[in-house]
Length: 503
Image 1 (spheres, rainbow, N blue to C red):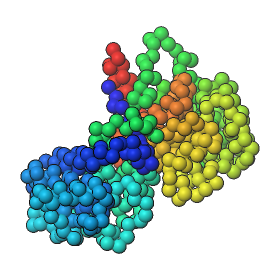
Image 2 (cartoon, rainbow, N blue to C red):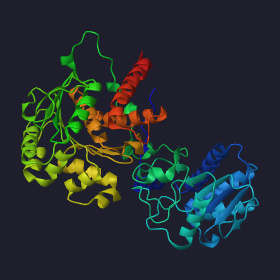
Image 3 (tube, rainbow, N blue to C red):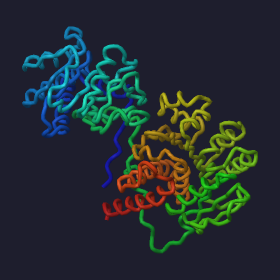
Image 4 (cartoon, one colour):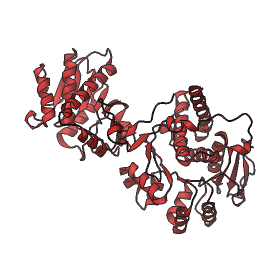
């Protein structure tokens, strides 16, 4: 059966959970963290010989490192500890962890030592935890540079030092981990922006704390269990009219391919009928690769559509603006807005007004630059806090939003938010967004609720690319059209898995 969707907490949420623990429980929390980290380390290195280097900082993250070092020593592993602080200045719990480490024969070095002849078995970063809010400079920056230069598996405790736990933004010099053992729950910064490049493989050690019992998760990681109740087999006695009429509006001169990609994706994900409303008067009237698509002039889309997508290759001409205004007036039709549809809305107040007046669900699928235009901001500001930007878009436009990028953020008008982890860098190529738009409009046309359709479409889009990479198609050189067929395969695989589990 599908794995559960794990909760995500920002730093404030983790601190709130820790604050609910009794004072007597807090020292045992550090003990549990250090023990869990030691167990993870042993699993990581298995029979890899050599000592383990642990770099401990001046706070509680360093305390976790001292517990870990003590546990490893007691298990018969050689642990070398470099300590970037003073024992007298440690917080109380970390000071006890240091003393316990010394009492079992441990000692510390004041700098990063040279590697032994046979190298290190593992490098552990226990310098700074999730509370870091300033760039790392000076001695600590030099330490991180030295640790990153060592040729061995690298493990971070809770979060790589230098990475902002809420945003995934590197704060100056940042530790590059091959594995991160994070405590209690996931944090946004592990999953989005630059976080995945610095965290490597992530394991969550709950430390015997059920976080959701103390505080509902602020966000969730997207997993198929969030939409598996909609993965239903079709009745044998069915017909195309029961599976929706999807429309795609776009394809101005030189950009017809964008509309065709979206329409093909909608068709291959199961919409009963797919209509392409194409702006370019010189565009073909039939898709020779997929003649099932019904292509027509942009102003001739049927009024009976069960879902409509606008934007792929739409352009920003006056005619495009007028066609988008008409699409927004389809008040009872779920609508997906992408690409130039978003750019037009950011430029024209009357389109924003029409968007806000809609009753049927609307999806917005911006990349960071498009999100910045919609927010009247700039791309750098959006990327500083991707979760906040997506949530603000959802609130401001009363829409279902996916802010695309590494760790795409999904936000809904009722303040739910999610981070998607599928996909890879090979998807950074032309047409990928058009395929996502087609997947989304197909699910909407088939009657999926907007929240589940957005979650499923985004997750499926990345999962399809991941499947292709596993099969040797990409990641480099992957094309958007290749993802369409793979998405169909992944989706049908989900259907089989879900219905095998319930049969």
